[in-house]
Length: 133
Length: 133
DNA sequence: TTCAGTAATAAGAATCATTATTAATTTGAG
DNA sequence: CTCAAATTAATAATGATTCTTATTACTGAA
Image (cartoon, chains in turn orange, cyan, green, purple):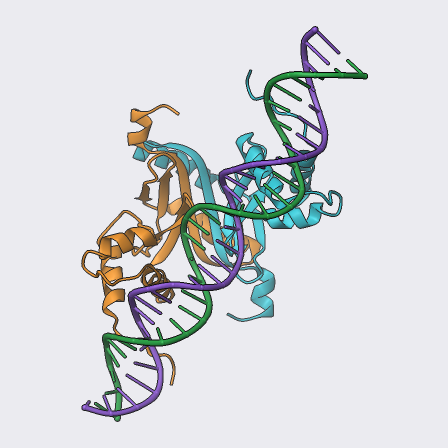
């Protein structure tokens, strides 16, 4: 009766590709990568399945860089750093102090927190060395 | 020789409107509000001037809600809560522990932090009461 | 005041990431 | 296998934002 999810080879492949990388790829990046093995894959399918995977808690959209959403299969709470020059997205450990603070804010303001995201933007160590500005 | 910025009544009005609210409006919301006093204002002008104000450090784009960017004239570091139901964006004090953690991460990972944003998403107290889910 | 140079604007076109539509294909239960 | 429901490719549509261009407004100098 309810919508029963079927095994889809494409969805499987999208999740595997996402799990195998720490690059926090865009839908487009996943599409380009997977086209090699699945020449008939379409970009819409990547978008739709990223949505499905997010619904199921197997993936999450992490932040937006240069107008595109970045996805991650690592759903454990952690922070991100985004380099404004090379646009790399790096994982960082979420300091315990931050996690605690979120819970306090929760109580203090009376809302129900469902997601807590800490994102730092700036210049990564590589870009910082190779160029001023 | 340099680009000398001219006084623009429209830009002034956009900044004042942004300073006068805590709603973290979208460009569209500002446009709708200002049309009353400036019937000849165009949406493109709002977008362009939000960019200019951001460049000058007088405004900042805070987060994206339902596909639209939200803007704020409060450029002091603070955290935000976003309600997924009513889409309100609320200011919260940035806990000192978080600010400190950001500085530590900075040292630990060797990047140059330029912006640190803490955003919590969930259900605000109003929506939590008026509806389950 | 007049003029030139330049910034700012309105209007609308263009861009581009994402979402929706639809007809065809795949999947899994019976 | 057979059928209904889920999934898909292809493509159209959406919608926020940016760009273009012709026009207007400001500023400083003569």
